Amino acid sequence: MTDQIRRASRSVGGNIAEAWRKRGYIANFVSKLTDSDAELAETQHWLDTALACCYINQDQHSNLTNLAEEVGKMLGKIISTPEKWCK
Image 1 (cartoon, helix red, strand yellow):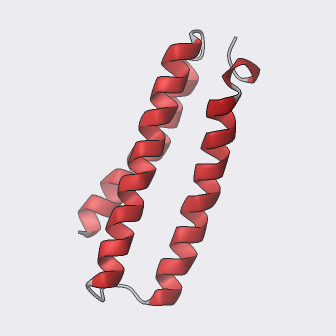
Image 2 (tube, rainbow, N blue to C red; image 1 turned 30 degrees about the vertical axis):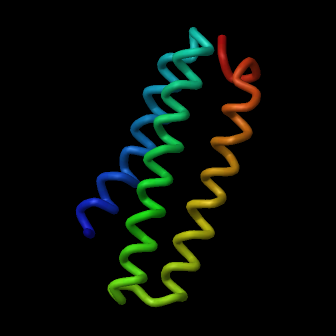
């Protein structure tokens, strides 16, 4: 499970980096950001599973979930206004 959390959470940043390189085309930019958001959702799933299996405690889960929600809000703002970010 730790490996899944690591892979999914690292993919968030990786997809953002790819999106930045593809910002010449709005559709490609948004597509990669959407992939990033999906990886964020997978990360959240694994955090919920880790809590349910008692691998992490409620405080750890809350802290990590709050951070994930902040990233999700930022991604949502960029996805909803891609023209601000694209060449």
